[in-house]
Length: 136
Length: 136
Length: 136
Length: 136
Image 1 (cartoon, chains in turn orange, cyan, yellow, red):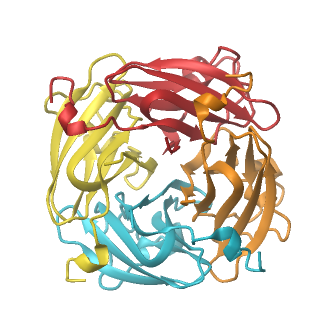
Image 2 (image 1 turned 45 degrees about the vertical axis):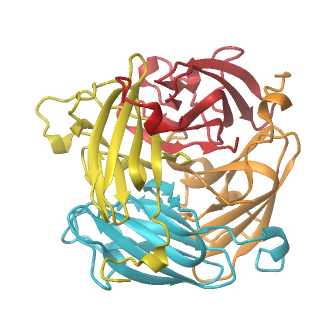
Image 3 (image 1 turned 120 degrees about the horizontal axis):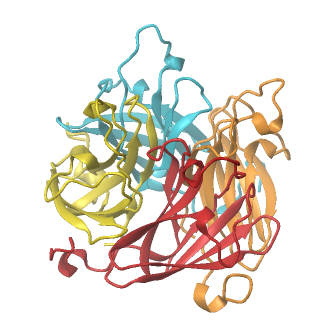
């Protein structure tokens, strides 16, 4: 260990994969008068435990139309990013009240966990599961 | 990326597997007077991120009788399908108040997530987990 | 498909693994006056999608003592068994209010999902996750 | 089986992996006047099903700063440890109201499950998922 909490020798290759999928997704209708913090929302928790920044591309799939994206985010080296799907804006915001799925790709290994947070209490995640990791 | 949000070069092989299993399943007794939207229900969220339609076969296993099925659905190329188990009708509807399990097979790689939705709020999934992916 | 909902040709090898682990487990204190159905309980949902009966051995690990078991159950061919941990009796019932973990081994491939059911509504699982599948 | 609930012959190699990741983590603000048992908290359930003690190192990653750790715990042979993240103290307690992620490494194979417990009822886990297992 070298002050960053990891050492090359103990870790070997960085933990993670470069392609992930989350088949379940749903953004509820926006409720007027509620602030951003009070809405239920879905998140993809991204962990980059390596020493190189991860350039991440998200593609969102639907039932009735072609996919949206690519959405691009960067997860810096040795950082985690808890990304809310309703924060995705470019190239287009995600539609509400519509089932969707997502594929998350990165140029270095990352780990992805899918979580839906309850609007009422930040500590009350409604569900969480490690995403499906594709083979490299 | 080519406007469909994916490119062959960045994706390599399509993410997913062709055989999945969900050991947990339970459809509650139907409550008279509640509409379809107000019942708790289980879903298998299927993602087909590839460029060929996925022909999917679902077999349902029980504790006390031979399996039901095959149920057949198609997930078009680059689409997701959030399939409710209580929508399965052919060859037979699933019994209520009975434990079941399912095996989901496709002719191209897909990704499967098991979710049980709360009847009261569409955004409140009660549980969700990536299904078990068999080896090819 | 041959009336059992599967065919050897389409399935290839049976889906599953022979060794599984569930690190999380907790049986609450029994509440006097509540029936068996009204208690929260943990279950291991076992799916045997193959054509041979699965002879299953469960070992339960604790924080402060040697493991309990082996507990033995059979999951017949093409059947699912939703096993409640508080039904395990032989060689000893599981202690209440005690953290535990379990390893589940079978002589043929099975699939295992860990679920905790809410005492109040059978359809309301509190959590569920596919167990960890060991390599063969 | 030899009284420890397992036998070398039936088990083969010990089930587990030596590197695990949990991208999701959040400790709520401490509520004054509530005891330790009444707070929601996150846990990593660690199972060491083998015959050698597991020396475990936990590194915690954040969004805006370098990682914390290593935190060190030992899971004795044939034991499970349900570790609360808010019990981590050395080298530093985890900050509250801050997203984090964790990497868990051991010198022998273990199995890791991520669980968030409800403060109100010990038996009511809010979520649980097997952590991501890295390749060796």
